[in-house]
Image (cartoon, rainbow, N blue to C red):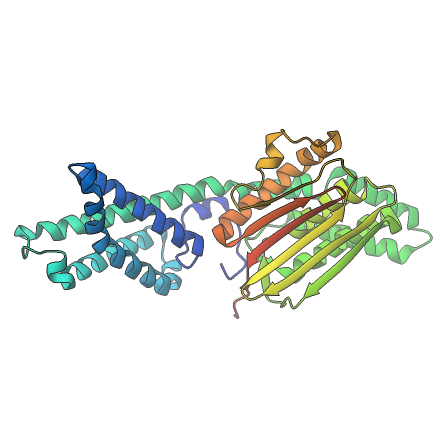
Length: 374
């Protein structure tokens, strides 16, 4: 995750979960304990016996689970170098070894009556640990398969939506209008447009340097300013953001595009887009705020990474027609951003939207990922 990587759709399906990711760890803990509760219910003879069964299972499950997760965290770099199925085998072997070791050293805690006949208990616990690993790895594989379409759609989104036809035509017309009077500015505009198209046609990556995304966004704004002139202003506020920070590609530029087309362009007097980038601890904060057409109602809602689009997809908002049109046009880009953040960072990324009478603000929080020294 620390290096920019090509987002090939098929390659994403054959990858082990990142055991150093907080969201992955939380899912493992929840699913494992859920399976333990199910096992307790199936083994119990009555409802009053369920609690005792859960305690018995937890005495072995808890140390096995925590020890396995700590070891997986340590060997994660080594697992990343293995082929997928070799990695699956390695994880299962580790889980079985940890389970049998804790069972053996636990002594009478796990086997009050002494050694089981023909090592039945050992075989049972080894089989249970393998089954639980299999269920967890299958879950993460299916989840990655479902979410990986976001990366595939990202490339299509780049080609058909990021640089829109009317943006291309408007830019060409703006360049033609200044070609004789301001040839140097026209040449710069054509170079910026070429860079945007080069980015659109290139193979997208999981993560790219933040400085590259900022430069691309500034080139995009410069082209829009040819068309809108003084009506479009941008207030960049970059606070203590290191050059080696990595973010998903085409994350900032689509937000600026929405701010221009659904905010500034709809205002006769124009306005200013505020962009805040700052680093706080191990988290990178990105905020884009723009003025918009004043509405009769105000709304504010914060969203987790899994549900921030509900309001925009429900179609039940009391906003006027212009607000509904804005939601419809924004939905595809916002959904794509959400799924890419969910796939790349899971619960470690957050997305918040605030919409009021005359402003629209998007706030994204990402874990600070930096370029690994070569």
